[in-house]
Structure formats: structure tokens, C-alpha cells
Length: 176
Image (cartoon, rainbow, N blue to C red; front, side, top):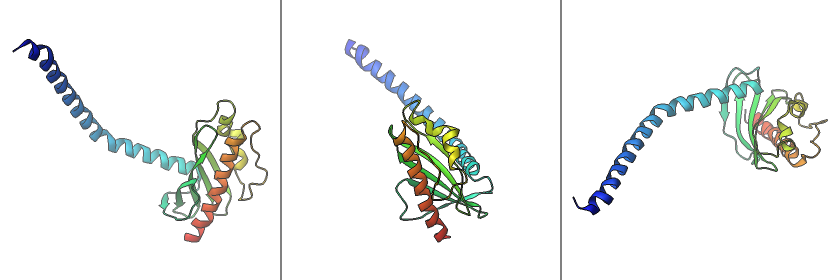
């Protein structure tokens, strides 16, 4: 073999073979673990919904049209206990993903921040129990709910998303 083949072609072939073997191993691993990961995510999502609406036994995803843009998913409790809404609002630092449960009488059972990238110490206060606990038991008027001083963009985004959940609640009740 010439020095060109020995110094240039052989290392390329060896590295290509190594990459091919590693890629095949990763594809095999992904094929085996993807269903396990998907099931774990499904169970986690179901648990999050049950946390928001504890009196529900199971949930069915509803396909509704004309919902506010912040409402990404709507789940109906199979036993008629209420609905759970997945919401995405635009905060100061980016998207805020929320979950909110509303019972069959139109009262919030619980709401929570699933993910956010708000300013530490200010916008992140929307994740604190002191802020989110003020929503429990509220109806669509959200009377008594206050935004956070210094984090008005984040807290207003949260409040407006909850208002949109009530809009979706009305649509879901009508679709029943």
C-alpha cells in the first residue's frame, strides 16, 4: 500500500467503520428504550393530571377547536369530575408551561408550573406555593388573585393563561 493509502485512506476507513458500528449500537439502544421512555412519560403526565384533579379516576384527551392559543391540550375526567388543561403562555423569559385542573362546578382545584425560564428570584416566584395557592377554589372571575410585584409580566402571563383555561372549560362543557 502506498504511503497515501496508509496515511490517508486507511484511517478514514477505520474511523468510518467505528462510526458505523457506534451508530448501529445507538439505533438498537434507541429502538429498545423508546417504548419504555414513552410509557414513563405517559404515566408521569397521567399522575400530573391526577394531582390537579384528585377526584378524577382517569382522563380522555378532548379534541376541541377554536380554543385560545395558550391552551395546548384538554383532558376530560372520565368520571365527570372536571377537566385538566395544559397551557403555554409567553412570559418574560420565554414560554411558561402550566397545568390547571377545573372541577365540574367551574372551580380551580389546582394549578402548577411545569416549566419556565423566568428571571431567578422574580419571575420564578410563579412557581412558589404562595402564588399558585391563591388560585385554588377560584371561579372564572379569579377574584382576589394578585400578580407579583416586580414580576408582573410572568405573573400576568400565568393569570391570563388560567383565564384562557376557563374559556376552554366553557367549550369543553358545551362539547360534552
